[in-house]
Amino acid sequence: MKIHEIAVCLLDEYDNNRSESIWNDLNFKLSLTEAYDVQFEIANIRQLRGERIAGYKIGCISKTMQTQLGVEHPVFGHVWDTEIHRSGVGLDLGSFDCLAIEGEFAVRLRDDAPSSTWLRNNREVLTEPNLVIELHNYKFKGNKSNIAAELISKNTIHAGVVIAGDEIGLKRSKNKPRLSVYRNSICLGESIAEHIQKGALSIVAALSEHLESRGLNLKKNQLILTGSPLPLWEVEAGDEISVLSDGLPNVTCTINKQPTSKRRIIL
Image 1 (cartoon, rainbow, N blue to C red):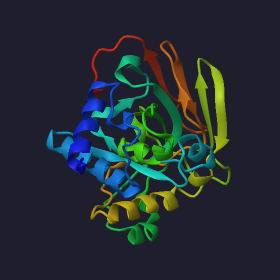
Image 2: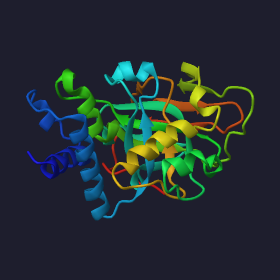
Image 3: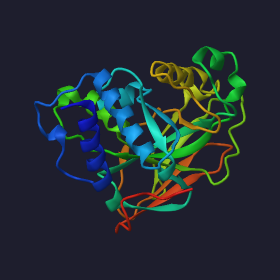
């Protein structure tokens, strides 16, 4: 199959939560380069139908997540304007394919970043970090030996993000920022976000280099999910999720049972 044909198939699976997948064929394989080709072709299709790239996500920044998802390095994906929710939202479980959540920090760009070199010399272009809940379709359908390619081709299984109602930003301090994730008032995990202490510049510059390789660059106001030191957790109907960090408003969402629509609407 050609890259465009694969992209059309995977986007149809995503839009309609289809259980059948081209990845069900255990002989189907992609290289990592081909997987990114598919991801960017899906991005082209989504833009042609009217969606807008609202930013990007960086995933698998920790050994914990790399082990959990079978990769050896950070991965990158797209964030879409149709899938950004405000804190307090009720999410329909049926609108996702095995919904899993992840707590992390995100930043925005105050201006365009024409290159990774420019970005490294202009760190003030990144806003102070805010909390988010990243949403994932946590289901793999292919051969485990090709899980990294499946992950990347499916936009790193990104399925949306819940952002703070008031993006005030984490003030820089000598204290390392602590991240905590709660489900139904029970702590699932907490960790120090080492990569955030200096403003996430290094990891965002790596994303910028990735985009440069495809003739793209980061734009003003784009939202960048910087990755999490914590693992993914699957959720169920009725769950109430909260992500906390000292000095920032909590970000929350509730998981509803019945779907109202496949497409997540938003800002």
